[in-house]
Image 1: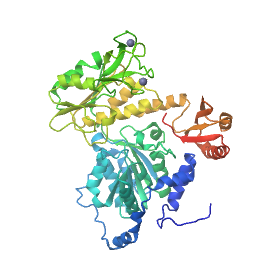
Image 2: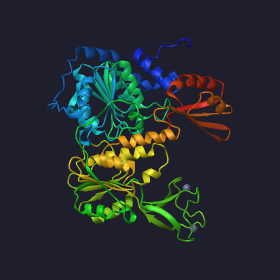
Image 3: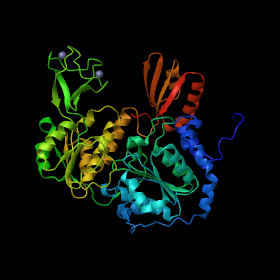
Image 4: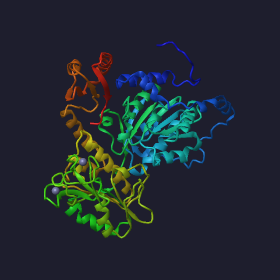
Length: 539
Ligand SMILES: [Zn+2]
Ligand SMILES: [Zn+2]
């Protein structure tokens, strides 16, 4: 430690338990402790601290926060769940972790119920949601029930965030609901950390220390003696490999899902027919645009981008490269007219409009179809926590495309989005999935509304690929000697590539080896062999 030259702030930014958590993150993700301490709190706004004494005085005079202001009679959502009574008994009582697969229409109510149980035991709760905008329905539902006791830690400007953080630290709130940073909220006596939509990619931080909210939540509750709930319609393979109890509805609470073969241009006659009579529907069309340029009209050669050779896509009346965004020009002759193979959300909007008896929209912001009757068309960007959908129909197009997407976790991510979309058909609607492979495990999981078998199979495939679920993965970038230095740690798998004079290694380790590996990486970084270590890259 260097000599202290100046006191910057009177605010204490972390206490002993948070330091313990930070040390664990530093070791698990092989990140400098200083980097971890830096993400525990928001950037400081000195002006907010000037009022600090004032705030503390205010608090002394503040009346007790009324318990459950204006709360409607508490619905016991989780009581009827398989494993629900055990979960309810555990919350706030002792260290424990659960996977919760709510019925789609219960997603928000389940979070409210879990938080209520925690508060009833006199402890505090953290709810982590994947996104700030639009405000997730789960956050809205919690706010409506718990009123002033809850801090919405979602986006906001720097000043507001720092003020909220100080408020949390001063004990002004009993519950915080927010995005990733909320998992570090300076609440005391945390009895519950509830991770909403656990399978969402945004729960992993793409900047150092590259932590995942799920792992931090599990560790924080281990340290505080609280309960961790990982909630998702389709949990990740990582969560399902933890071997913790799964809490699910006791009866089938899933729409009827019909699998049909895609017809011409990906239009199954069954779907076209269904669209005639539906009032509110969502068509999940994951491919953007109007279609893909197949051949150049001038020279007859296969179309590709003149700048980079990438795929050319027609969108909003223009052909552009999907890789470099250049305006579409034929790589062979410079022609600009192409034969288009039609297919994509824009095209779907076109044919759905002709079939439907209600308006069809392709909104740029996530929203549910209007109550007056509407069909919404769009991709993953629209599938958010928007509350119970109560739609007549949800259609999933291009289901087979998910299998072709690169990445070990691509199918798992696709299934999670399908399930969130199809859940909107609860309680009285139905779903149509277009696939040429009805027996595909992901399609079957969607039909059953249960991803267990699919996840078990994915675990086998991940293990066969050398990246078993639950084994820590690191991407290490460095120079000469890196490969041999890493081999000493006997990785389960090590993939090495070189880029100029750099070596990039992707390796999976046994969990027990991470501490020694981390110490070695620090030494190698001092020696200049290691440039960067990135934990848990998206696979
Ligand atoms: Zn290009
Ligand atoms: Zn050409």
